Length: 199
Image 1 (cartoon, rainbow, N blue to C red):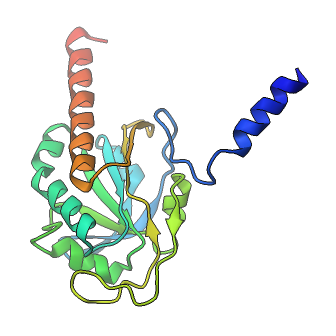
Image 2: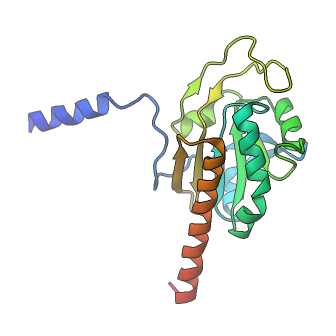
């Protein structure tokens, strides 16, 4: 018994300091200042979940290469996410000022979905994500200094009951979006099937 317990303790000890929430885990609720199409507002995950599944995607920084690709992909496919009954919110450690510009930029978010400011990284950390320290002088694709830390790129598909249906990480920005879309379509299919059978 002691050796079994020691083995379990060892397995826990070698786990990384941050481990993203897994499928079936409750998704931490949050409210945050956000922007949609250049307009600032208070985003509430709880309110969004009342309308259906939410794709909560964490990304390092607005106006950077991979994040620009990811935002544009979400914007281009937003109609498909909506058709599957899901909404999308991006979360980063950007200031609300940066996100107001990013949310309205026709090349990226294009006013299609909200982006929320997690300036102190507390939301990212509540989802088990690593936050890396930014480097002084780092600039974005506009040539402006970034000036904040970075959450790792990870997407959570959260069902209406507040549970994580999928955790998507370790992929390219485009593949991340594709996998999120595949997941919400699967959820919609399962829901439609259950409704048809009266389950």
